[in-house]
Amino acid sequence: VQLQASGGGLVQAGDSLRLSCVASTSGRIFSSWIVGRFRQAPGKERELVAAIRWGTGITYYQDSVKARFIISRDKGKNTAYLQLNNLDPEDTAVYYCGIERAGSGWQIVNAYDYWGQGTLVTVSS
Image (tube, rainbow, N blue to C red; front, side, top):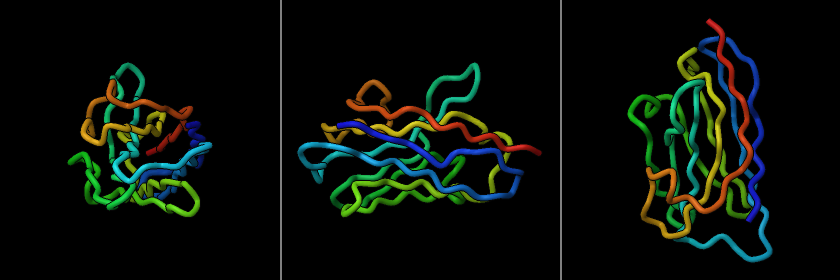
């Protein structure tokens, strides 16, 4: 599985962005798989921002983004989206997407089996 992330950019505080993560695979994305969106700010560890179970659409959010970010997926396009609303300079980071096949390690970075390249989101004040 190859993941292609896009949608980052330079925005001002309060603006919105939509990040995409397209999965290319010769097989299929299984219902139990989890697509996670992580971010890593300079000097900090990679952290889970949001995740979605491919089949059911059940979502998980980090508390700091719960009211502002929305994760979704389009099965027909093999694409997961992360809508970032009311952005804050603290959201500045490289955003990554990953797939976890076991379906149980939502928040564990090392549990993810596939990673896309990061896309940079910069929020100015």
